[in-house]
Length: 192
Length: 192
DNA sequence: ATCAATTGAGGACATTTGTCCTTTATTTTA
DNA sequence: TAAAATAAAGGACAAATGTCCTCAATTGAT
Image (cartoon, rainbow over all chains, first blue to last red):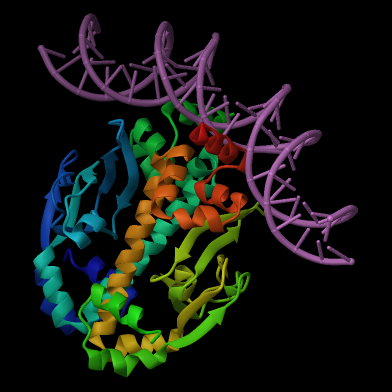
């Protein structure tokens, strides 16, 4: 059953009874995306949140110079969405693209608002997830401002080794906030 | 009355009835901090959230090299806390210090959890605030990775001009992610 | 299997930023 | 007010990173 990992994930956020889970899980729809498919497209309002059962996503945007900047890689057993766009219901500056075949559970904005207003548990899940996303973003900002490109690369290597294999060099480079040239230097230093 | 701006701020997050506000506002206690006083001290678990009625705070930490890095300036009509520490009830890596005399409304962890579990409205305020903090942090991360030091300085000049006057050069520099030397160059470029 | 297209590695030089200073300006205290 | 302490500006050189390139390796299609 595709919702077992999801139930477990929610349980770890806050206690949710089997009844409450079963009553609400049908607001989420199973969906399969192929490599290259977009879950979120920049310019459109992001209307959905996905729980990733399997697969990997790249979150990116185009900066003012038109460069493709990767802000995040999302892997299985996590939610993904263009959170700011979803919260504010404004056009997304981010795109989210599957970089391999991915299976997800999707809920739309109306569905989630319905859960929020009908269930204190879901209101709490919403808060706890927002807090969690905040902490992830804070960590990301901390890494951006404190670590050298080399340290960032080593961290990625430790924390998300699959990404090194699955993502393109230019995407890893922009994720780390450096150019391909600098990433090439870093890889050289490390291998020696 | 010191809670009017606070009521207005909450209203703007989500509708809260006068009764609900009056029933719950007493969980917040008025407090005055002098320039240099600490609201949060790194190493201790942050047990409080403050709404800033007046004044300015600097949020900072010491990195592995022992350098004092400013991560944020907080001004009136906003909440401030070491959010990660507060959420996880773990020792804070951040300190929060008043850089001028400041008047705040303070609630402790127990009080807030009490409001969360007793009032759907407060659970929602908690979620909406977490979402808001997320967006602020995302914006901060975006600025960190996209803007040059000069652009960052000009942004600070536009968005929080008071900070330029109130904060020390080294604190502004670390906030921008550059050294004092680079900030000095930027100021020179701009003035010419 | 072969050729074209894509991707990654890395050289050479320019630019940016940092480090370590000294000098100047401002603030604090006796 | 004068002396001392603190804070900001900026010079000189070093180090890091970016830009623009070429070349090698890999992948994909016929």
